[in-house]
Image 1 (tube, one colour):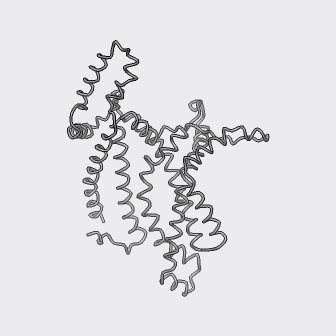
Image 2 (cartoon, rainbow, N blue to C red):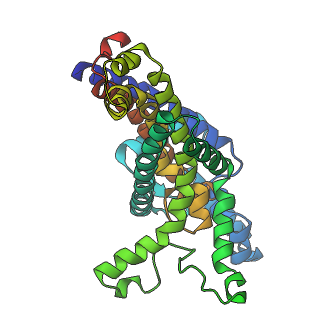
Image 3 (tube, one colour):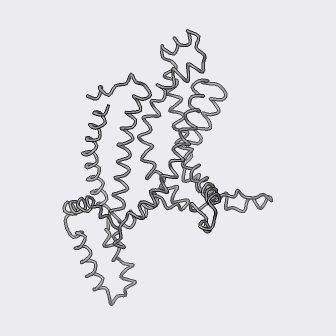
Length: 342
């Protein structure tokens, strides 16, 4: 097993290099660069027309300093050198990205870990129930509800929730609107609150974003869990267990569940990258300064370093998710062997 993991980790290196090269050149295809953003029309207007020549000279010096005047291949070489040294900066301010990057990363991971746990904690039991009682009223009701949830775009639901809470509709009927914040992750007076008050304040702020991030994945994974369990339940060894007199609960939870978890394990590889960049729109709608919102803002500002580090982190999580899925296959069912990959 250790040899297999070492081999897979080594295979990740050329894959990451390919992703790095492709991402860098795709980003470079977008018009503009940090120099044009920093010394473009807005900067010239602020400096005044008399200083236009000075602005152009400053832009030329900036391009030469950061090698934006050289071919893209040469720029990539300089980028690799700075990446190796950890010298990633915001070109507009020429300050390191790491402080802002770490703050945004903590916010997004904290938020999406809650989403991740909720999705699996709800979808697995829901899928098991639907598979254990197929075509029952409960299964039919869950199918309708989950398909409706899956069809609703998260950004549309997020905007509707914001409008509903901020609307005067409630007061027209003498009702109190839900006391849920619709912006940011903390109140303005957060620093003055006690530890418990900070905790409850955070919970109130994440209710809407977590709900919008959870329901789509929950609906999809529960259907996958149901399909996987139904396929397993139809196998001969399940009928044999039933014929021997095993209870329905034991057949479902002991004999069928392990193999039924395979689709959920496979989807783990796709869900892990969502911890970094999967919540761009929701973070934008609720003004949450996480990785999604920061990456979007830095794409507009052509802050190549921040965008590249975000993409690479998502790539690492994707590859790690695939490796983790392979390992969990063996944990769930020891009959699965790593030798098949040789």
